[in-house]
Length: 396
Image (cartoon, rainbow, N blue to C red):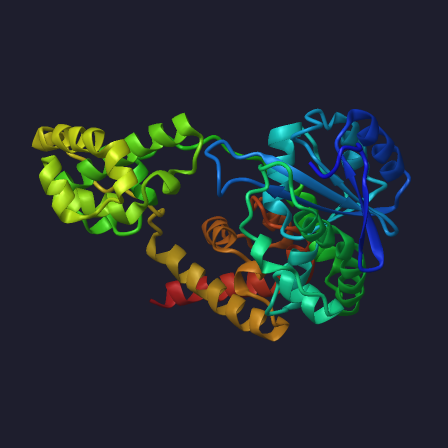
């Protein structure tokens, strides 16, 4: 926390911000925000420091004031739900996907009337879409990089950390207004608004019950015995991470576990000699790691792990023709629009269009995920590309 008062003011450039750490303070701020037409929103979480990540700071700014809310002190943020769900109030985020998921997961806060400045930058064809680069180029403001990887779950936070956190939200509203104007000039504002409406529905999905080795770079090239050892070591690490509430990489890194799986040490002496683990890791985990290796070495051959990544759907030859035609069109059109091809039409939509092969704009309505702006502006071109792909198939 910052100071003893529930709300404390500090100067940041020409703005001030208020630190909010009591239910009464939050209720007062919620009433102020409810009168606003537009607010800028940012948050800080602790995924780099804890297994069970959580929102540690919520920064909300109006056009004239900024509020830094401490959800570790005020755990019930339900007073903010009407503000965030109000279609009357514009909510400006930068890279909103993670924030929207986190706010709903921790506080059941839903977002309506979103404007994502990072999405806006992508649809404008800007090369640099990070907030730090935008603040530097548009407002000549430099954020203090030393706090980018800070542990926001620690208390008290220094005044400098709170200042750093507050600055993001303060500049989001003027940035959004700039970008909205530029999008209007290009005729793409409705594109971004539609994408934002869809983004508001984002939620955290429960983890898949897949082998943990699928998340480890390099596992693809391991033999089945080594892969089974790696999986055993990863499961041990996951259990330890949950137990001590640390991210798995802070227990033991992937590279170290890969080396243990490859080298398969079976005694403490071997483990010491290989120097794969730090002294602290040896002291804490050596015996259990050796037990996991021994256990995996006894798995019968027929039960050993097989690297089975999520298979991509096999496309028949006619479908591949249509996919190729759509991708060719996408590359050319995206280049003309100065957009990333994936933002114009992602691969999932390309596969969906190729599989359904619509012959009219009306039939395009049956393609899941296809946006109105994509149909309104590019339906003829997409249908033409599909026709060309079908023609080439018939010719061959």
